[in-house]
Image (tube, rainbow, N blue to C red):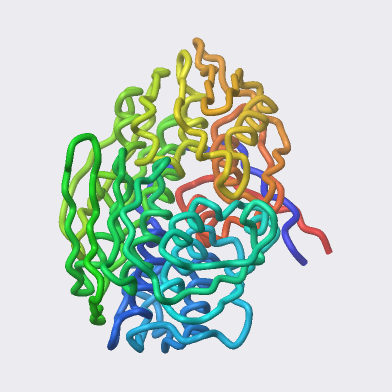
Length: 450
């Protein structure tokens, strides 16, 4: 029997202390760099969602020794990766499932080696364009055969790469990281110029593996310079709590009366805190305590309490630091007073789904005023006196985990229950989501098909 949908309904206040699952971006990178390195990499707190497991399987296919050792003390898994100093050609097609970050970073890493590799994924991933990554890899000397629009399945031929100085046409940590990973085995290395800074986990982690990498602020851009001919060495990595996952229990507390929830060990990388800044602008009662360093990243314990939120205009330059959090921000905006305008978020249309369209449709079905433009989403908050979000909708998620979780959070504080389809997809990034929210006091029920 499998769950056909999940339904969330109003219950009492949410209370408790939880730990967010390991950061997905860092988990992918830890496995990939561990496989590229020479020697053993030990990873604590690895996110064990479906996307990351696909990357782990891919690294084994490329010749690394990949082993799960057990559960980490603070959640997630303990893993051991024995790298061979490079990739060998896989014996079969590399299936990345739904992992967009995984496949783009792996393509960059694989491009550095003289071999042909075929990549595929699930229906959602096969519909997502890869041209943004393929363009710079092609300039470095890689070739490929793929479906129209740069879509999977795709066969990539790498090796004999040349140096590149590539300016990102739009902010993308995935493209930046793919170029840097390819640059590890390119003659002369690689340089990426960012007009707007994106998450810097790859740069930080490369240093942890012993690479020389330089970041310069020059003019209006950020230059990331990686010399070629470098050898990575295995290391120890502690994966901090994912701020994109922590966002769900934190926003749930903000919109549910009487609630107070603490998320321990949350990553506070300065390029990942756009949502906290925006919620602060909206008047959220959020406190940050126990700030500390774990494995080269800043982490802290973050507490959110029920708050009377006000609509704001989110500056477009904040988008790279919170692009995955706009769906749950839209839910917070639904419970606010006034309009919240989110500009410069066109990237949301090429994620696991068109997230602007799906959030607009789901919120409208729940009685919220929304306005949708190509790169903008405006939410008209329902908070007027004692008026609440109506809810009462069945939301189509198109297999997108963040669309599903966001609408379930909405249902926890709406007047009428909210249901989402395809709940199994939540496991791609947050396999313990339902159990965590129930532990805090949420009421989430399943309907099943025999």
